[in-house]
View (cartoon, rainbow, N blue to C red):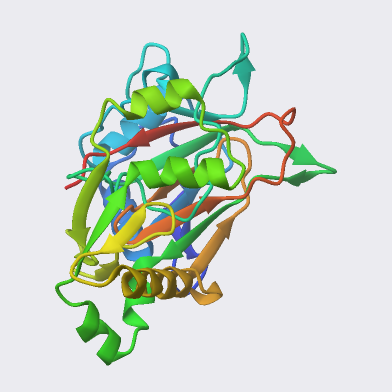
Length: 286
């Protein structure tokens, strides 16, 4: 079956059909997938089972994988796998249980933020035959393109501060549970970084807004109140409906997103006893 790319919205997201991740993909097929990824920023592969080895093999064709610095949530035997889950064993979460509480891209508090990430759904919470725990993705590239020329000029050259500490403080304030093991592991890595408010995508050259409610604390060179107002204005703009794709998960879906040209947010509409288990790979930033 030939590779087919089916856009999900005008701004972001495409389903890639005719691909079986449990088998080796030809270079010609992979090039079609790679082009679709950097055109649509999010790609979805559905409707067949595959394992961690297949997941790693596929995502590593995009570049070198990195190991995230949260040892409690690393897959057994394969450090490339990071676990996202609300499941507990011996009264401890086996994975990151509150990932995606706020709109964000991954790792902006690092000098070298995360590259693309790929999430494989193993268990999806269900209710009355409907999948719960959707993930929403917003195009920061389409959001930038839609700005007025005057706003683009205002943002040119500005730098913003991104903080891991803010993410955890915000989680606690808004009812999340930042457990001590996660906090302790977070303390072993970088926790704050400065990046341009507008990033240029390394593969396609598109300009992307790089500011999020989850991590961005202030814009350098601005009074704090003015900085906060601009952050709020931009983050509200990024998540307008015309820039958003909402993914409803099915078991064995793989969703891959670009952390430069997108942000994402999880939907926590399921109960603790409704199991959610996903495995993730993350690429180094290129």
